[in-house]
Image 1 (cartoon, one colour):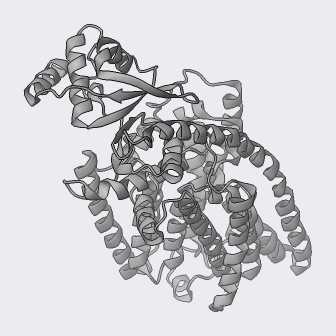
Image 2: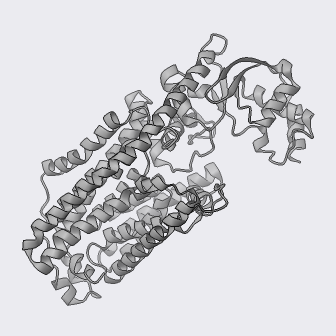
Length: 557
């Protein structure tokens, strides 16, 4: 840490240095002013291309474009599902446009990503999974360009090139960016706000607010960045604009969340409650692998906190960028190492999305150390050695591709099985008796749902998910003790949803019971071998609204 004052104090704006009242003069003099002239468009395009090509290669050649990693990176299918159902159903909700999902996670991941996908679905006329994967590629490449630009601003072209190469070519970055996750969008938007600061205060606030709407943890990061702007007295007008823009957009977002979910901080609340405090964690103890990982994660947190403390104390011109970088390290170490989320830790998490930006930021720090600090302390004669280390580290990092692709290849069989299950179900649904009617399906297989839509023409508006069945609202109800009430509830639900073909998971005891109690209401017409589902033709007699209301009161009362 003793070297940091010598390496991280470079020019952002000369006027900013002049007003840095609390900064020791000697520290400022140790760092020469970096003269940053605007780059030609083709130079930034070259950086973008260097980052873009390996990500496109990963998407279209190293992986199956239709399979982001079924069973491993299945959340990508889930993000697609929310956007697709929003386009098909949510936009036309009688109470106004809203996000839509079969599994109840409509707003869990935020608003911006599904909204962007809906626009792209309409513009392209396609709902292919390649679209969200390309969105991730776009923001991943943008992150590399922004890192290059920020490093050039603060430490010069040499550091920028090295940091840009790390961001463009590290296997974790390339692979995660090409699969379709949300992290690249959130990271890029925060970096964009930093890049716009201090001259574009209004747009800085907008970028940080959009980041918060893209990722739950970006609420913490964007608010932290906004607070960090107050650690310097310069740029009061721009700081005010950034603050007003961020607060205005976040308040509008919170009002939307309140109206749609009843909780104004829904994504933050459930990400913290479910992941940090373990409400969705079923493991009761830590495994040896998890205990072994904890010291490294705690060390990462401590390093991040130390760097963050130094940054906010010294406040060099690069402190906005360093605040985000060190803060991200501290958050990653804390959330993974000292919360209930550690019970979900797997040995391959080191190659996962959690470390997407930490690895890129580590590349920045290494580049600064080798190409800025060392030359200042030891002379420019050490630059060739510094570049040699950069190349060696970058080449050695490519060894990570072997375990990454091994993990991905294991998902190919799962994806084949998912496609087979979709084909079996749709072979029945596409029969004349069912085509265009309502299909009632379990809510927790978005990969299969995607295959049914993309390969077999299923329309989202003809699908009902089983999450919000009658027993969701009557959690204490016992079907075995009150079979007549249970039968009526199921009768009301199936008729009110106009369900015609019903995919039944045999593990759902309530569904098995109603089929057993009322065999005249159902006829088995097929099965989905891969998932164990049975397919039931539904011909339930219509029941009156009064009977449904009475049964509902009995179940919940």
